[in-house]
Amino acid sequence: VPATPRPVAIGTGARLRPGPGAVPQPRFPCRSDAGALRGGRHDAVHLELFAAGRVVLVPAGIGVGLPHRRAGAYVRGGRCTMTVRTSEPTGVVELAPGTLATLGDLFAIWGRPLADRRLLAFRSPVRAWVDGVRWTDPVRSIPLRHHSQIVLVTGPTVPVHATYAFPPGGVTHLRP
Image (cartoon, rainbow, N blue to C red; front, side, top):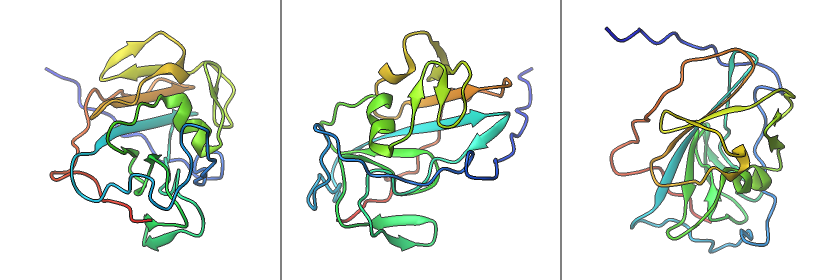
């Protein structure tokens, strides 16, 4: 009989709710036409972060230049967009077609630290899973692949999800 997953509380405070960022990288410049995902095929990855036994929110607006155009908690566009970005606070990361990127690239675009012993403001070993399988290579090297489920944990053990139910029809599309 499978164990019932135990819920993990969403963290409060700046360390557990970091804001979005958009730091252009040589491979991922911020452009007004940066693969705006206007229909057609696109890729999406789900990222879950846990620190100090709490959920860390992955914010909407990573990879979207200020000022953001918002609809509630969702970012619908900005001055520019990158081919790796978030538009909703669910942990879904959008990738323009053909984009090859790693988790290290996402964190560089976000402007937040990630290393084997650092996750955002937390300094302790970072454990990683990809599609429910323990990742033993450097966490920055995890590839962002279509419909992957990536879980990073620092601190106490939490339930690790092997899959994510992506919405039918894909994620909300950003417009520059």
